[in-house]
Image 1 (tube, helix red, strand yellow):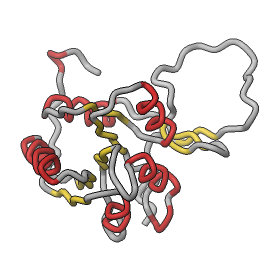
Image 2: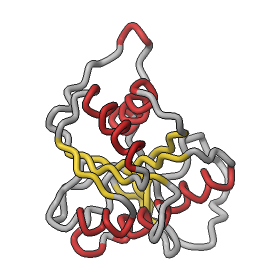
Image 3: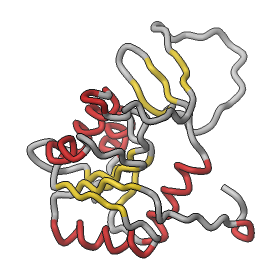
Image 4: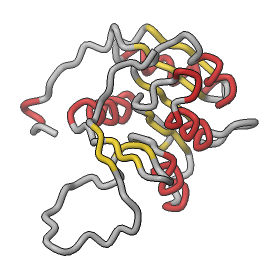
Amino acid sequence: MPPQDQIVAYDFSRLQVLLVEDCAPMRKLFKNVLHALGMKRIVEAKDGTDALQALDGYFADVIFVDQEMAPMNGTDFVREVRAGTDGINPFTPVIMVSGHTEVSRILAARDAGVTEYLAKPISAKLVLSRLRSVVENPRPFIRTEEFFGPDRRRRQLPFDQADRRKKPHEYLGPFRQNTR
């Protein structure tokens, strides 16, 4: 990210957002934060199943999804998005939101294909930070037999040894056009 004195102001007014949260008061709070950041095109869903239905005919530029919901939790929802079924754009940035910050939960979200992870309680500053990360530091997508999503490595370090991966992989650009 650029230094604090070089912060870029973004216009999020045309951004189409899918907000997936099972707790109605939290959904309202989150929506107020998104409005404060200039986002007005927000579709709400109460769980992963509801969110998949909402994506039928709606192209989201970014998805915020709670991790713990029923009947379909956020992690399973992300796997469905990354599978690209029913015309869903599998390259859509997904920001997982959770009150759980245990390493095992963060790794599960990462392994499902989330783009960013945001711990509750949320604030406009934290939401903006994750959105900026999505915009300013896009990661290439990787496809293997077991995974599709943003490269899980944050940094590309020099590597001068033999590739020990047992299965092939494919690097894809960080963004793709809407597939609908």
